[in-house]
Image (tube, rainbow, N blue to C red):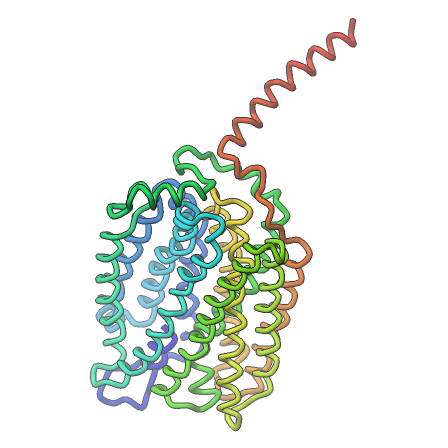
Length: 437
């Protein structure tokens, strides 16, 4: 969307319709996605646990297909407010992506393979950006302009929805192409039960200190990711003074680095853990520290670079997001470590908290830049503030994180707790009666 907004406001194009939206308006448009995304996080986790990830993700894909296809027409009639409305709806539906995916991973991945395969799955996020950003730049440069971006994305999602509907399944035993041997192998390594058998232990979830530490870490990760995802095209084009077409291509390079960091870190982490070199908690803390401290150093370096250092700035961006990818073997896996059965729910809670920061990031950036994204001294403030947040977030993770499976992950935990209370109360009454005698 960052590339699309740049193209929609490109006043140099006389052959297509463009809009005079200032930086503040652009910030509101870009942040509006996160309004819906944040509100829907907790319901998304509950819905994914109850109905399974397949249907939830299919509905999300189809909804976004329709919106992207209609948006060029709608914006012509109602202007930027309708773009915000569409972005809010897209946020509401895309909020289901990570909770539903985490729910599916908890039902599909044995513990000994969880880290590496999760890295491959979540690496799809970076692959999408790597493909979408340069293609968006190329499409924006055609005679159809920015409209072709939305039409292409809409068609792609429609095809994806068809593939997903045919091949996906909520659990191994529901997959149409799964052999008995494959199903038994997967189910032997799982520690989950069907979603309908579970009652969510909300009170115990909120009392888990490790989960709060993960949430703080998630906030730091989310703010930094949104900063790059939303504002990177603007920084490269306006801050580093690189053309829109080239900036779209260059904006994808850091995500290639992030994808490589994601895949390599999860593979290495799993090998280290399975060979008993480090404990699972040590793996999580080390890889998360590489991610957050490495990204912070990159942001600090980036803060002091300008258009006269274009090449060095791009290299720094690539290395920063490469190291950022190591969080895939860090805090992101901690939800599955703590509770495979409630991974979707706990991730949705954390994502809800993290996305309050996501909402504020584009708006805060636009306020700091003061409608002048060419001023690199203002980008310095943005980058240094984000670096400080990442350092604080990782320190919290180092102090309070855990990889021990929590007791409330037991499917019968609530029933056992209630049974214990029923046994204790009569016993206390008996003791009291004996004392009175």
